[in-house]
Image (tube, rainbow, N blue to C red; front, side, top):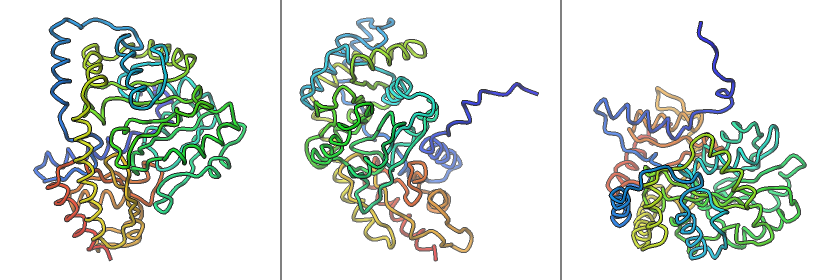
Length: 398
C-alpha cells in the first residue's frame, strides 16, 4: 500500500473553471463542435509592441535570475502606472511581482491569515479565493448577494459579518464572475465600516480594471484612512491579453510586501525575466490596444444581453465590467428533458455541455448555486451560435 499524501490536499478543491475547460477539450478531441463560453481569458493576441519588447529582452540576454520581488525598473513602472491610472502613491519597496495575480493572492493570504481566522468574501467570488483561505487554514465567511442587488454587498451586510475573529476581507471590482463594479460612493460606505475595525486587512483584486464599461476605475486603496491595510492585486493577463506570460503584482504596506517577498523567495523566487522586461513596456507605453479590446467586449456584452432576453426564465444583471454574464438559472431547477432532471447549477452546466455542446461554469463554484457563468471572450459568431444552442436546449426542459 502506498503512503498517504498530505491532508492539505483534502482542504480544497480543484478549480471548476479548469475542470470545465478540461471536459470541453476532451469532448472537442472526439470531433464534437464545442462552443466555449467558459473562457476566462481574452481571445486577443498580445499587442505587437509588447511582443517586440520581449524579443529585444531575449536578444539583450535578460536571461538570468532576477530579484525575488521583480526588477527594480519594473516595480518602478508599476508605481508609475498606479500613479497615472489610479492616483495612488507607492514606492518600489511596496511592490511584489509574481507569477500571475493568482500567486499574488496566495502570497497575501498566506502572509495574513492564520489558523481559524475568518475571511469575509462576498458572493459570487472567483473560485480560487475560498480555496486559498482553506489552504491557509482560515475560515471563509460568505456575504450573499443576488441579481437584484447587482451582486454587490451593502455596508450593513459587511458590518454584520465582522466579529472578533475577522482578519481579512477580499473582493474584486470589476468582479469575476458577475461583472459588478463598485462605485466611489459604494466603496466609501464600506470604508466607513473598516474605519471602525482597524485590525482587518482588505484584499482588492483589480485584475479586470481596464475592462470597465462605466467609466474610470475606482480603487478602495484610494481612501487614505485604510490604505495601509489594503493589498491591491493586479496584473497583465486580462487588460493586456497576456494570460500565458504569467505576471501579476501587488501593492501593499512595507510590512505585507516584505512578508510576501519572504514567502515567494522559498517557493518560486521571481517570475520570468523576459516577461518582466515586456511588462515595463506594457505598463508605461500606449494602452490603446487595451482600450480597443474593451470596446469590443462592450459590443459583445450588448449582444449577449439581447440574446439572454430571448430566453424564458433567465434573470441577468447588466455587467459593468469584466467579460462574463452570471444569470440566475434557478427557473430551470426541477425541470427535465425526459432523460435528465436539473437539480442545481452543476446539472445545468453539464446539461448544456453534453446536450447543447456549449461550455460554461456552474455558479456553485463561485459561491452562488442559482447561477451559471458564461463568458463573452469569444467572437460574435461563436457567441450567437452558442446562445442559439442554449436557447434551443433549455426549451426542452419542461
